[in-house]
Image (cartoon, rainbow, N blue to C red):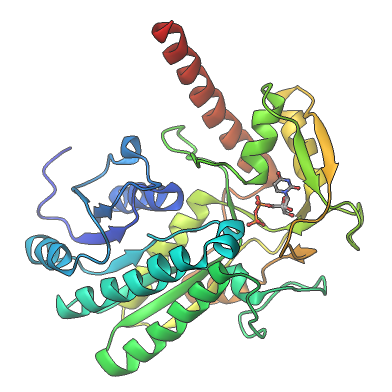
Length: 341
Ligand code: UDP
């Protein structure tokens, strides 16, 4: 890495994860050095390429105090947390501990360190079981269906009170479906276990387990659920714009990050088949617990306030970048197996 110490820095908690690492790269390219704090419980060490790294917990206030003193970050981004909706219903204590208690420790530590701007990873899960097919605005009533969604909504509320009491300005970004991979092929999605549609469809095309479609009886044109797939680099760009908004003296906000365009499970599968030139073997299962028929953002507020316009979020670009990443991961693991044998 070149000499970076004259550049401004941002503290990124969870910067080794999927969205966190793409965001770290974008900040680095924008001349803001990402200082990453991550416990590597789900993060990926290989994604740590863009600035100083500290392995540790977001609840470690002494560590956060030390990092802040050394690097004087101009703001913080909070990604770290557990993020499986299904797991959260089976193991809610993990979610309330990581995403609520530990996250509050993090906020306390940054407030104590004098940091006054934070961008928070929230989720469209806060909206709950949306039945109507219109796109969702931020002022829609919230009613999370899972402990995961509850924790995100709770942190949004904490941030509002921390704003009025401690002057901690915040932007809560409610992501729709993060998807795709770095357009330069450097970063991508590596979850264990993998539960997301696009990686599972790609793995199925590459000879993995057939993809199970959860529900074909939704009131949608082809009977499968509709989601708003948003490229991870576009989401990363939302964080950069959000922090700049706060640095420019902008007010605290809650914003959707989504494209406003929905795609069904079957449309996604077709896009993967076209990209791969291979069939995606499928089978059918019942609806997954807690899945809404259609979740599509109204992203107009993010466009108006941040000038955020997704650039890479066509389904074609999402699938082609994800495909490239998986082909590389697949190749690398084949090589590793060949060497081991
Ligand atoms: N989905 C599916 N089979 C899978 C994984 C997902 O049919 O193996 C569906 C899921 O029910 C949802 C959509 O694909 O309608 C997107 O799911 P994903 O888990 O990728 O994201 P989520 O919307 O749950 O955040």
